Every structure is written in C-alpha cells, then in structure tokens.
Image 1 (spheres, rainbow, N blue to C red):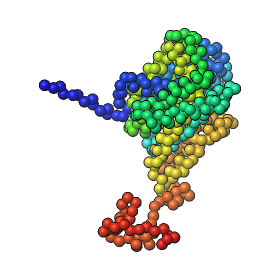
Image 2 (image 1 turned 120 degrees about the vertical axis):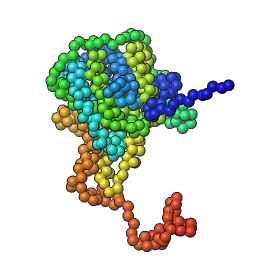
Image 3 (image 1 turned 30 degrees about the horizontal axis):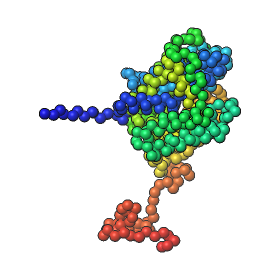
Image 4 (image 1 turned 120 degrees about the horizontal axis):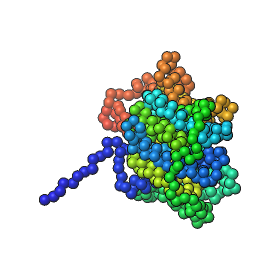
Length: 491
C-alpha cells in the first residue's frame, strides 16, 4: 500500500511563484534594505525644510515606512481594480520632493503639502484609464529606452551614497567611504561568481551585511542612536493638524502626479519585461490606481505621494527572484518597521557607502535590462535608431546638467527635471511621429537609417550554384564540401 505523491501545481505566471517562508522573508528584507535609503530621504528633506524637530522628522519617517509597506502589499497582492500583482515596491516618490519643499517655503506649511497630495492624487485616480490605454505606444523601442534611462539616472544616487550621502560632511567623497562602497561591490561580484544559486540570489543582502561588519571594525558605523526613542509607536492620523487646500499648491502637485503616473507606468512595463509576464492596459490601470489610492490616503497617516521604486526593479533583475509574494513580505517588514521605530533605526544604521556599493550593481542591472530589450528592436530601414538616440539624449540632460531647466516655467522643469520622464515623453512622442504617423515618411529618410538594410551584389549571386548554403557560418556546396571565403585583398 502506498500514498500517491501530490505535485504542487506550477504557477501560471512567473510572479505567482511561492517560495519557502524563510526564503520569502529573506529576499523581502533584501528589498527593504535596497530601498530604505530612498524611502527615508524625502521625509528627511521635507521635514528639515518645514523646520521640524528631530522627533517630528522621526515621526514622518515612521509614517512613510508604514504607508509604503501598506502600499506595497496593495500593489503586489492586489484587490479588484487595484494592484498590478507584480513585484513592485512602493514608497515615497522623489518626483515631488522639490515641489513639496517649494510649497513649504511658500508659506503653506506641511498642512498644505498634505492637502495638495490628497486632491492631486484623487484627480490622478480619476484619469488613470487614460494612462492605462497607452500600452500600444510602448513597443520595445520605447520600453527599452525608458528602462535603460531608469538605470542610468539612478547611478548618481549610487555615487552619492558611495561618497557618504551627505555632501556637507567632512568625509564626503573620502577614500574610506568609496573604499567601503568598493568592498561591498566586490563582495556582491564574488558571491555572484563563486556562491551557490541561493547565495548568489542573496548576494546583495549578504554583501550589505559584510559591508556593515567591515564598517564596524573600521569605526565607520554608528549604532548609538538605535536605543533612543520609542520602541513601539503607531502613526497618529493627522498628527500635524488638518490638511489645508490651496489652488496653486494643488496645481503644482498635479504636475508631480502626472510625472509619477508616467514613471510608474514605465516601472510596471519594465518589471513585466524582466519577469517575462504579460502587461496589458488593464494591468497598468490596476497598478496606477493602487499608486493613486495609496497617495490619496497617505497624508492621513502623515506621508506623501507613493510610487514604484525603480531600484527594486533592478533587484528583481539581478536576483532572478520574480515572486510578487517576496515583495509582499518586504511590505510586511516595512509595516513592522513603521510600527517598531527601534528596528527602523537598526536598518538606518547601515552605512550609506554600503548602500552605494550595492547600488552600483543594482542600478547598472536596470540599465543592462533595458539594453537587452533594445536588442530586440528592428533597426533596419526605419527610424528606431534615432528614436533611441534622441530619447536617451533627452533623458541624460538632467543628469549631465541638473540646472538645465531651472530658467523654464516651474511646470515644465518639474516634468523634465526627471531624466526618466524626459526620456519617456521623448520616446513616446518620437515613436508616434515616426512609427504611427506614416504620412510624410520616406524610405531611408535619414543618414541614421541609410545603409542599415542588407543587400548583396549581382556579382556575388553569380558565383553561387544550385545547392550552395550556409551552415554554422560556413558556405557549403550541394555536395557538402566547404567553399573557402577569401577577402577581397586575397582574392
């Protein structure tokens, strides 16, 4: 007598794969470490601009962790009409930091920031059907360009982290900081090469642990603040007072929401490319609605606009862990960190150069994924090459010259100050101009496409006989004998 072994049914989609609970939370914690520096930076900047005390800024940080975790769970697990069910980590968007600082300095205070985020996010929620229907305008020539730009625009973040993160600090850019970042990068590469598959997939997390240990022995890690402050704290709704609603602030924030919608659309498409999962207009719409709903509710818990984190897209690519439930576990960890500030302070003690060393590989992987997508593009006898060239150029301008658009109207600079948005707008418009609006197009219409079509001369064809063919790069005749190919000089 025997019992029949039941086989676990295969996941219908790559992102639906379920890993053992321990591995799920280990990989989820790796996601948290990857994005932790990014999620706490906006509340630090905005809180400092609003003249808040250290305790108040700590409250903002805890709130951002808590809301980011809930938003991540909504995005990955999903409910009807909300959530893309893709491995996307949510957190406070960098796109609106400068606008929020401007609102604070304009006299509106943090209450006006919260009010503008609420109203603009609700407007964004209403217009998501428009954004979800533009999937046909995102062929590989567009998505590859945007994914590549995402990786390239994140490299200054990694470089800043590697130098220390605080440009006002005395040791910013020191050999010690950069050396610590380089050691972390070296550990990532070493574990990726010589480790087992499990170790290789955890290379980022293990490298961060190793980098932190090195920093402790080198006297570059400070855990003294871990014991200060509350151990458990629930975010108090409207802790800074009721939000206020100012028209100018709402209009400015609406522009930020449009940028956020564009970037999140690009991130959804990027992670779909990386996981090999189908992304259609409905899925984009569900993801954007989750984004906007989270952003609309977040001010109630003292947080700001929510968006998908591009750096975690790179982590999905480099580890090969495509399960959305891993990212859901990361969301649970973020919620716990938001409720247990003491744990958040432990994670915050990871030295910034360690994050920078890991970021170099992570963000480079995002760019490499975009290049892989661009390799699928057909460049012969069309204008795709100039679409890629011009769009990448537009995307790199804000990186090469951050003050390039400072003299432009604020609404314009808000949109194009982001390299991701610049590249996305350029790629979409140029793709429509050259590949959808056919009127006026001519064959080989520019030097960029001249000579890209393959051709052979009649003289070459005249040398061939019946049965000649290529095998493995060799010219073989009808009897199976190799025909030598000589250079024109040797001929």
